[in-house]
Amino acid sequence: VHPSSGVYTGTLVNALLYHLSSLSTINGEIRPGIVHRLDKDTSGLLVIAKNDFAHVKLSEGLKTHSIDREYKAIVTGCFRADEGTIDKPIGRNPKDRKKMAVVAGGRPAVTHYRVAERFDGFALLEMKLETGRTHQIRVHLSSIGHPILGDTVYGGGKTKFEKQNDGLISGQALHAWRLTLTHPRSGELMHFESALPGNFEALLCKLRIAAHTVGEL
Image 1 (cartoon, rainbow, N blue to C red):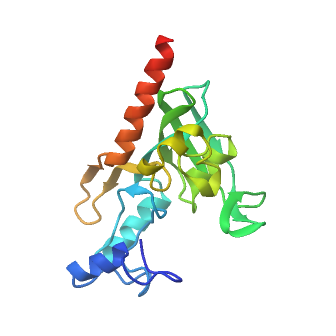
Image 2 (image 1 turned 45 degrees about the vertical axis):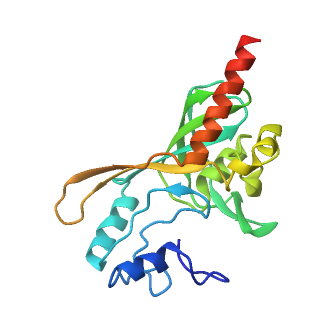
């Protein structure tokens, strides 16, 4: 999303500054305009502020939960319940500071999920965030034994299906598909949706075919 240690070009911020004269200055020169981030290899919708007024208002919306962020993910394992809530604190992994983990004394983190579709050994989930901790969805799902397909950092990438379809997998199968917010100046309620990436759809198609074949057997 923005430049960081070892990554200086090719980011979303670089592209935005090329096309726009300026972005909000609240986050400084490294993260101008960034109201919230997506992990590398997570696709979908982001909120970017073009000026400081908008940035302040949008950030307030995140804190008061008036901005709804909804995600879709393909996860490993089978779910008995159709929906649930993961309420576990998240902090730095004490054994690997580059990763996050569910830890005592971590920052509060809440993820709501619903099973949208079931396959043979996998499921398509729809999720809504109450909080926005680093790697929240990935850590939460891994903590309940359902890592995201392709997420080798948090336990994914180990199944036979993933190895057979490595060419379709680009990082974790996680997509920010719906965003609802109030326009910072007009007060208008705005809704945005982003279609699933082609490789995500292709993986779903393969899982549906596999599940149908198993069902016939």
